[in-house]
Image (tube, rainbow, N blue to C red; front, side):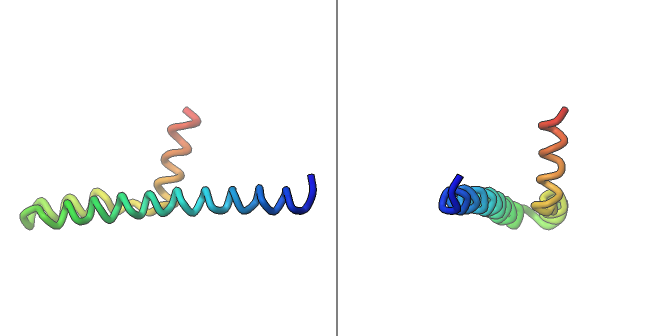
Length: 67
């Protein structure tokens, strides 16, 4: 494989990872907005339930895929 091919492959992998994180972040923002529409006691519980970092999400996702 040429250097150009390696670069293109690396760029593709990098961009795919970035877009996955961007999708996750976008969904999380949407969930936060939905939580903020709820009355106070429910709002805090809702926000606590979506407080998963992207790295933790990836770890949990990988566990599900492997099992």
